[in-house]
Image (cartoon, rainbow, N blue to C red; front, top):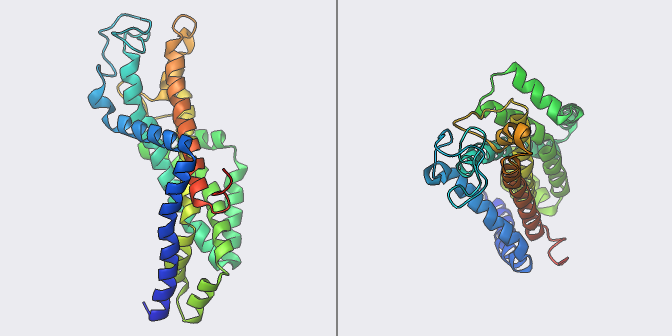
Length: 297
C-alpha cells in the first residue's frame, strides 16, 4: 500500500473507529434498544445451550397429557405428554439457527452484488438490477414453497431459500450506500493514485458501507425467523419430533387450541418476542450508526 493510500485508509479507519463511541452514546440515549439487545443475546445463548438446560428431552412422554402450566411444567404439556417448556428451549436452536444462517448468506450475496454494481455501474449494474427485479417479482412464500418442493429440505436448503428471498433487500441498500460514497473525495484520490477497482471496493468503499450492512442484517434476522416459522407451519421445514421449531409447535397446536391454549400461545410468544427484539435492536443499531438520527432522540 502506498503512502497516499495509507493516509486515505487511515482517514476511513478513523471514521470507522469513532462509530464505536457513537454506538455507546446511542445506547445511553436508547436504553430500550439495549434491553432488547440483551434479550437477543439471551435467546442466542438459549439456542446454543437449550438442549443441555432443558429439564426433559423433546420426545419425552413422562408427563400428564394437556397439563396446564404449573410448577412442575411451567409451560404445560402437549397432547403427546411432552413438556412444552423443554420443546420451546430446544426449538430455539432451529428457529434462530436458520434465521442467522440465512441472514449470513443473504448478507454475503447482497454485499458482493451491491458493492460491485454500485461502484462499477455499466452493464454489470444493469444486470444486477434486473436480477433483483426478477427475484422481487416472486411472492416470498410462493418462492419458498417452490424452492423447498424441488430440493430436499435440510438445514442449508432452508437457509439458501430464505437467504435468496432476503438478498434483494440487502443488495439494494448496499448498492445505494455504495453510490453515495463512490464520488467522495477519498475515493477520487484513491483512483488518482492508480488503485485498482478491487482495492478501492475492499479497502475504501466497504468500510464506509459497513454501517448499512450491519443495520440491514440485524433487522432481517427477525424476518428470517418468521420465514422459518412459516415454512415449518406449512410442513416444509427441517424440524421433527426430536428437533422441533416454534413454527412446527404452532402447527401441532391447531387442533387443541381451545382446550390447551398454552400449546399455541407460548410458542407464539417466543416467536413474537424474537422477531420484536431483533427488529427493535436493529433500529437501535441504526440510530447509533446513522449520523442523521443520532440527535433525533
